[in-house]
Amino acid sequence: MMSFLVTVEPTGEQIEVEEGQTILDAALRQGVWLPFACGHGTCATCKIQVLDGDVDVGAASSFALMDMERDEGKVLACCAIPESDLVIEADIDVDADFAGHPVEDFDAVVTAIVDLSPTIKGIHFRLDRPMAFQAGQYVNLTLPNLEGTRAFSIANKPSQADQLELHVRLVPGGAGTTWLHEQLAVGDTLRVSGPYGQFFVRKSDDKGAIFIAGGSGLSSPQAMILDLLEAGDSRPLYLFQGARNQAELYNRELFEELAQQFDNFHYIPALNAEESEDWQGFRGFVHDAARDYFDGKLEGHKAYLCGPPPMIDAAITTLMQGRVFERDIHMERFVTAADGADDSERSALFRRI
Image (cartoon, rainbow, N blue to C red):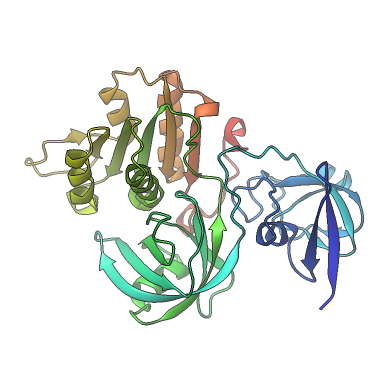
């Protein structure tokens, strides 16, 4: 198979890109860091400049890569496919806490499928070999007879390197999650690639950490918290978990036990549509629970947000009103088939996160 050599400026690193492969995929598999977020051409985080050579821009959205930028030789690394050797220029600003584990392919055997809530299943896999990853990162699953891959955050801690726990919410109209909920069985084998993503704990900054999670967005914070507690990290940790009602508030017992076991871990669940009078916890949205808990004074913390876009947007507003600003806010948005996978209204301020 033909391949092309891509030189990355200003570092001078070189990657070999196979015919039909995207620049980003080749870079991640060879341990060369390029900035990226969504991985499917909608967020513009991976925008690069082509200095020399020919490239197919691929399926980049017109919002993320405007016609004027295309004319200037800009492309999105997650979509761009080389048609010759290339020289590109990327905005490389690697976070000191990023481990940069290369992306690899794995065979994953299903070992258990657990009903976590009426709409969320916990799917457990055994990998054919250990996968090095950072808590908060995600994997891509290849599903039979479905085009493309499906991304899911890893819910287990990195020390369980030969295992994979994913929390999969049934998305109305989502072919991938419907197949996983209705067809997948224990003993089945799926192809997995990973790890991906820039969502991880900045351990070099010892500020207390606020985790705000909605729905199956609990998966990344769960991995992060388990990893920190296992390492004996003593910084204050706060998990605000949002759900509609008690039935959807999954893994509650796990976090209540951790809060009893570790003095520095605090668990605050919030329900916004609970009808039962026996609920003694916070009633309302999860960002309101965070504001209420800290009396609006959230400064001095790092914040990690994971969940659907409306929750993320509300949490960002609450955090900034509480004087936690962009440098201390890290997030993973869940854009699903139900959202139309349309990220066009994403805040320009946070486009690079």
